[in-house]
Image 1 (cartoon, rainbow, N blue to C red):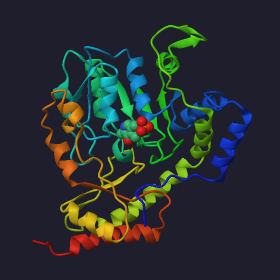
Image 2 (image 1 turned 90 degrees about the vertical axis):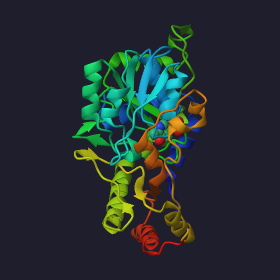
Image 3 (image 1 turned 135 degrees about the horizontal axis):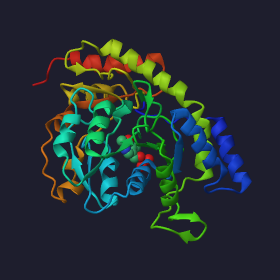
Image 4 (image 1 turned 30 degrees about the vertical axis):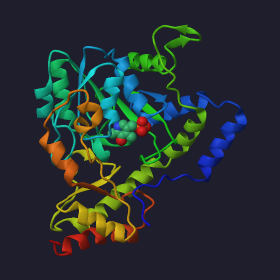
Length: 363
Ligand SMILES: *Cc1c(COP(=O)(O)O)cnc(C)c1O
């Protein structure tokens, strides 16, 4: 059995958790502070604020920008639902721009079409580990005075033209077990803006700067020292893991390029793609899935229903027609690319996809 994802937890993570358990300091404490400092240094941002998940990271980032009722925020419909739900949590209105059919990230031209006088921010998603077109997005944001909140939940360590994520505004990360690094559950927001970081620190902890003095409506979105201890160890490994993901991706692309009915993932010029997912577009997805399943190979469909077509949004009156996102949801298939795979296993994955392409169509 070859799984689509595999969290890598070693003896060092176990020892780090036991050490925290023995210390008696279980909630947010010195380990969280240390994790924030190391994470900020690693991604190349001035500040990092740890929170309880990628979802709460996005929520806090919006609140820290004072985005709420009456405001609109533009995001992509081709993502995990949290990329849009955070806008609803803040009381604002999501607006969906279509995606670029090659890179699957939000299409800057479509963003411009969604801008109204109520628009306050853009949430581009660095989908599958690949940076969105931040150069064009930053230009649009500048022109219209919009904030940028990057959803980097799948893109730990990705860069664009050497520029780290989070430096166009704020970037939100997730440490869910399937991501490029994990803390079980957890999240992080990075930014170069000191005032923004300070507001996020207050919001994650009941609106409090001084103990029991509550300046604003805040939340309990804290990370624990147990999670941070795991994160600190994972942080020493993630670069090697990303490099292995890139090698696995290169091996898949070498085998699958030119196979009829299979479109391999394209890397944006200037981008470091950290291959959270290796996502192909296939002409006959059902047949490819059958071939993978027969061989005990896991796969994922990210995402089978674009966000604007989910019931949550249909109930709220969304009737958008977004052809590129809708087409992608019918064609995409993510193959195992995680760093625990052997070269032989990667070969088996490629072989399963090629076998499906070779079989005659069953009519
Ligand atoms: C995982 C993910 C999130 C949410 O992160 P959680 O830690 O699961 O809350 C948000 N956006 C994207 C694109 C994700 O992949």
